[in-house]
Length: 506
Image: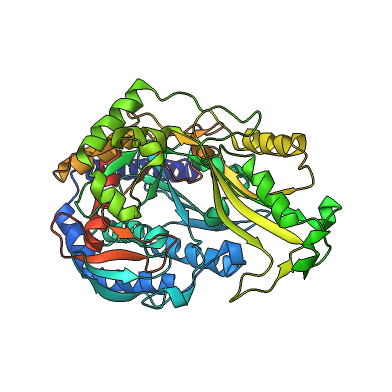
């Protein structure tokens, strides 16, 4: 009797708890379904502005440079701390055979999950080439632009990434519901060709978390100084490698640098490298002549139409001025030059190194010469096939002794324009009064293939208002306070991510 009464009372308590839980769930769903208070979030963004700027400066002060094996462990730990501070509940460092990756999840109990790709590494720098110390991230005035933060990684990619994290803090601190669940993947090898991105992203934990997402996007500052934004549907792939000719491997030429007068009777590894390089391209250097090289598919009519629409609104004169070039390849007209930019693979020499390169002359015959190359690939081509063709070509032409040292690279990536990830971007941009251009693929590269290719097969893209310039170059900057009404500063960039996440939730 007492036992049955006790059980009955427990049953009533359990039922009451279930009822409370049920109604709390309804209230949470209603809150999530209600329009967000963007004014409250915007006010929070403004209130946090100084702290957000300082946080970005502190991040820039810690450079993680994969090419120099500098601060990769520290960079991953710092990235993990930033993710926790922004509200990610689960954060862990995933080991690879190279630099570690940072994996984080934010569970908002939302219906949709979105992946976010970060990189915590930056490019090398020479302080002597900068007008402001590259790790001090000073705020400086740039005529026609506004107040910018100058530093290595400011726009590529710490500035846009910091703005994305600021968006998460502002939503949380404004008491607004987080609209989507998030999966963050941050690698530390992007600037060396992401050689271990597959080990990281396809780790069972990371792969399982991303499998439920509607796609993956990379934060970027995409506004030009005219305020316009181009939405890219993909990127070229890339192979980074070094070709090395040496007397040791060749079995001819010197085993060490010797006096140049001996060239009369000693073979030169430097000339051997030059002759080998000459077989890779046509006489003008513009057409790939590697035997058996993967063939680029023709440009589709859909993509040709996108290029025509974009080039009709872009200034050819301004582009030539920006790059400092008087002519395009073969003196092509503006539209055809852009079609080539999108559709053609490339073999590019980044640098040539051999013998003495200091002041004056040294009259040596170098025993070793190296060429750093990058090969850009378009969809329909693969990194492995390109490397295999290069090696086979050199061997068949009698240059099998030349070392082919691949340091990184990956396949191209492509996403359909009607993907939810892309359509949400277009909606946000149009909400800002912009008329965004669609572009088939960027001429540069990022490792989006790991998301768009099997087994994940997800849409992937880039998004973000704001402006910056100088990636990989001296005086890299990210706009903080805009003097141009057409271009968003830091707070505007933050709000673009807020709006994008809410648009994705719809």
